[in-house]
Image 1: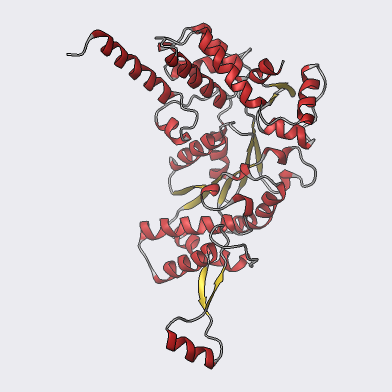
Image 2: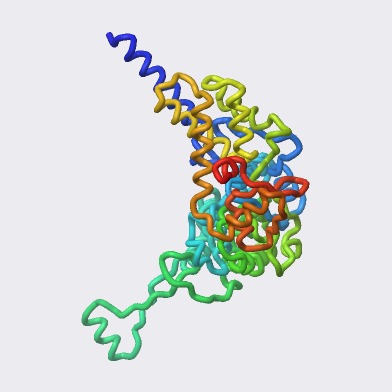
Length: 403
């Protein structure tokens, strides 16, 4: 029989392990949804708006824009679930960053990813036909590349036959890796995808394509190249599209976003002002924070997060770790303070001289220009938060260590 101290240690460890699982900031959004840990902010159910427009307007194009940690993936996954409730729909959720190197993304990448997913769905649901298999093979060649045998002259042919090792050269695919980009006409690729779309339409189904990950594109021009070519081709096919985009699209000079999309939804990192709303405390309670801390610490975490859900989860996680290392049975004020300092120092790292100057000016009551590249980076990385007025403020955790 274990002694009492061993039992207590084991129980304490299990309590903290359960807490850390519920407050894991790096857990996939789908896991949080499946575990019922996602709370809807009243009046801001973006996924319902996205699903309604996709359902009512076939072939619509919707853009979801937001900074890092604003919950875009969660909203897209919820949109996919919402659309799946409707009859006669084929909903495809695709993370572009998992399929191709975003730093080298090519025109046609979205169309190729969509085509490969459609081919898999159609063949698995309705069975293979010659036309479907040929379409999938053609899309696969465009997406991933292939080896082309170059027999050349009759002399080369004879040499190749003798060696049984014919010379080859690679035809690059659209997706990177494995091969360097190669310019190609999207019409052929769109025609192959059209074969799959027609097969689905013949069965009375409508297609929804949800593309995640494009908010990580560093250069807006990369996004516009996809919008001008891929999304235009997908629209002709009658597929409703919901796509994420970098926050810089809303502030950069040049193209008008609404010229390319039927609806633009802005998802700010700060879902609410914690000084005016108890919504963040509600989220903490929904994840079982009351078992480990009192209401004062929950309110303190909420204010320090600045209203950013990812930071709220990260702060609670760090506070739990600090309490466990301190051999404390509960999370106390000193553990919350340590978590806030850790988050603030994380935001402090990597700041340049110009960005430090912008932050000092903002803290002193000065203005903030999001169209400036240095200021935009502060906004995208959540060091500066945008309120609905609109107004801007330094993230509370960064403000604490910065001052």
